[in-house]
Image (cartoon, rainbow, N blue to C red; front, side, top):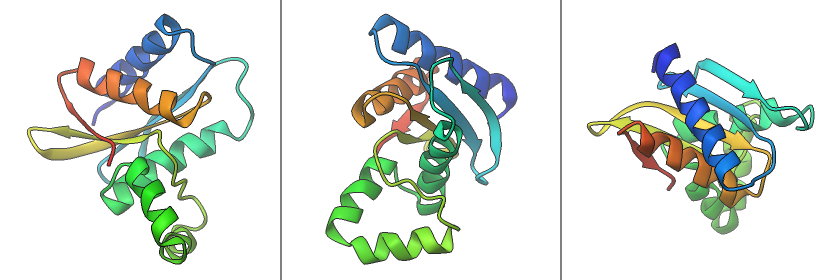
Amino acid sequence: MDLDLANALIAAALEHRRTNGMKPLTIAVIDAGGHLVALQRENGTSNLRAEIAQGKAKGAVAMGLGSRALHNRAEQQPYFIQAMNALAGGSLVPVPGGVLVKRDGVLVGAVGITGDTSDNDEACAVAAIEGQGLTAETG
């Protein structure tokens, strides 16, 4: 994941949001090591959104699952996800909107989006990733 790709993913996600009349978003793109590459916050989003977007993306990379899968696991095994969140310093956000990015089956990073419903956040991430010819994994 380089800066050019991260910025292209953000631009594509924002375009999908605008085209579909969704609420303003905050978007974080991280690399396969969990490091922030790019983050943008649209006007009108609340001040905790940057942390939420990063928590969705970082949780996906750290656990090797899209945040939708983490959400499902939290419903089935809440103590496990609570323990993982403690290990992650409280930064794991197990709700849809954190999507793994793969190229030819290899993890290159993740996109975390917040601002609309979790399903819409995820839809923006998937559209952006697939629009760049990459594979999106939600869980």
